[in-house]
Length: 97
Image (cartoon, rainbow, N blue to C red; front, top):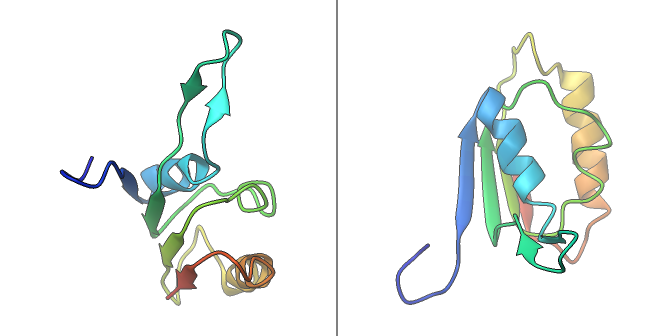
């Protein structure tokens, strides 16, 4: 948590990048009604093992993705699909670099 803001973020690299994206889905309710998971913003660098569109459709907080131009786990066609999905979320700050 960032002191004085009551905000929390997630950052992940490679395999952890996917889990940062999953935290960007926002908070969920458990069976007792308590809020679990979720962050206020997420960054994923060189994310791998992604499910497209499944990992991106539920994103509900600002998301930054850092991807490479030559990545054996995330090809340019998939990067284009992610760009298209995130472009539809016009109300949500996001970047893909």
